[in-house]
Image: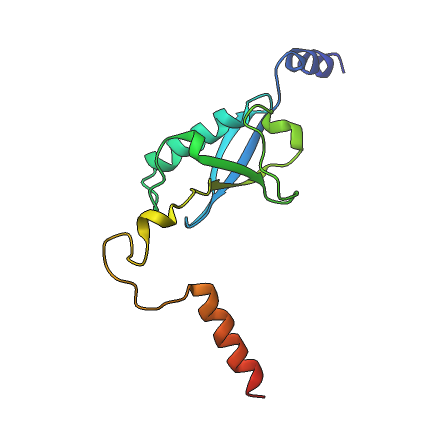
Length: 139
């Protein structure tokens, strides 16, 4: 009993460590590593990007942590703030996504980004809606 209390008191000064799992959109599997529950979300994103690059995973993401958002896998749809601690949510499963980049439609115009003309006049969403409407109306 005395030995148990000593071990408990020794670990009381240290922050708990968590094994977290981060899924990256488009990647084959999650990245897993141990962090302190007091670690900031920004530092966790940085560690995840370095680990992802070290393992040679695809697609290549880059190393700028400001281009990414971290979401709780089983919580709401809001991204975690880079200044909050990773242990504040009580979850260990996360999703790493690239921030949406604003697109300039004036630069691209009718041609694609590589200078090739587009085959269709609509977007992929319009094509899906059109194909769904054909299937529904053919009943």
